Length: 146
Image 1 (spheres, one colour):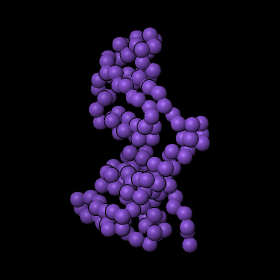
Image 2 (image 1 turned 45 degrees about the vertical axis):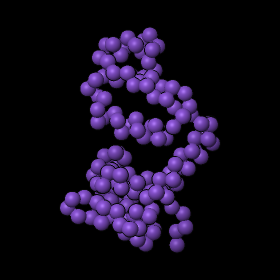
Image 3 (image 1 turned 180 degrees about the horizontal axis):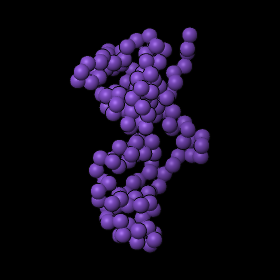
C-alpha cells in the first residue's frame, strides 16, 4: 500500500481542477492530455476514490475531489516553500520584465501568476512597449528581462 502522495500527481490534480479540463491542464503543464489523464487515474487509484465526474461539458470535482483540493493546494505551497528555503533561501526582490504589447494577454498571464505564487516575495513589474523600445531599455538597464 502506498503511503506517500506524489506531488507531481497532486500538482496535476490541482491544475485539472482549476481548469476543469484535462486538455487545458495538459497545455498549462506542458504535457499531453493522455499523460494528465494517466496521472489523475494513478492518483485516484492511490486514494481509492474518484476525484472527477466527467461529462460532455467538462470535469467537475466529486465530493472526494472537493475535500482534497484545499489540502492539495496547501501541500504544494508547503512543498514549494521548503524547496525555496533549502535551495538557497527565500527568493525576494524586484524583477522588471519588458513585454511586447501583443504578448501581454493570455500568453503571459498564466506564467506570471504561477511565478507570483511560487515566489510571493518577488515584486514583478511589467513594462509594455515595442520590441525596439524594449531592446533599448534592456541595454540601458531599466528592465531586467525582455
